[in-house]
Image (tube, rainbow, N blue to C red):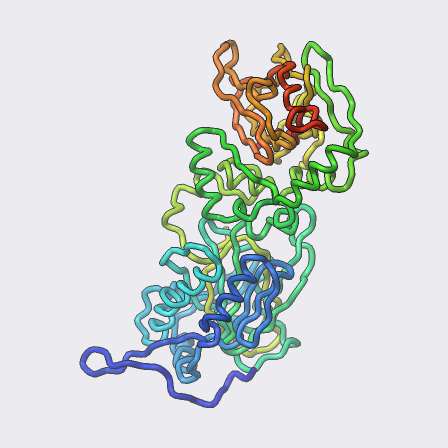
Length: 496
């Protein structure tokens, strides 16, 4: 698209003393009711959507492009002139080299003020509607100017509280060969940037925006494939975290998608090789031979060991289980943060021409391997700053139990248990997990098996746990489920 367009009347209205007040309006097509619903559905279901007025894409992560954001070319020309008249400060280090204006929040120029009002009000409201994110009214906004040899290299925009990053390009006629593209990176299995998956070429009046919450970026396909979408909603995660921080435990019901959970249970009924886990003076239950598991159960084990789940658990609990999870100091000012950028990987390639790239954007300030040892084994975890987990798939039947013993591990840890096949299970059967204080008999907490429910419990060094002996009353389960001889669980322990 050309940087110079035929002029057209720009919106304005009469202000005080008869002066015309400059008004910015964004694309009517994007706000059209049917199209808005389609965009919202694409965002919610993480599916691509292409329309001449807007493109929603998932490769390599969720991002949107509006080719013609502002309606009036007269307005854009006026905005362009005001921006170029600002004072710019050179930003220079190993990551970037470009010129940046001061924060545009307090600028009084008419076109800049009008753009700010548009982004703060109408566009923010539209974006909240299509993304189902409750965006705060504060937006970080500055203008960046890229010239010959300038660059912004691969980085993430993660700042605590940021949810959406945006860039509005005001560039002359541009060609991909000039450089200056917005490069979107795929990631490897450790969620580190791997290679450029897509490059977006700047063009006049193009708006690019993307969700940048850590979980949104690192949920990957594995979370959307397995987990109930309710638990992937950021607002609901915040509610979960608030409750968990008060009680140090929570039970998340209907955790897996119903179709996935059904397939898991079917495989557990038929296709698993089990072995006795002892010795009897410490424990007695059955453990699955993981190397022989069918694909659906291997997939579930992979889910619980994935970095994506480590990050999701960080959001559920407030624990630092992933390097992208905020620490305590970072979350103190949570209520004061802005609607802007987050954890997607992006970069701007070198610009080989002397032409100037001008872009308004959200401010970007940059300042275990999981083992598979069974929780029942007396292994001493090596001191490490990398969060780790241990896990196993267990079968519980009449006569099974675990005991507290002298070598019971007492560490700060997050226990996770996903229960399967618990229909009709009663607390009087046993099989529940009991938490007690070291040296005390009184129970601090009891977690009863409940179908497709994820139990999370954080324990300290003074807290011990055991699984209560399953008594013969459990055989009553057969009255309702003749082929059922107990239940199963996926049991994992996570360490910060």
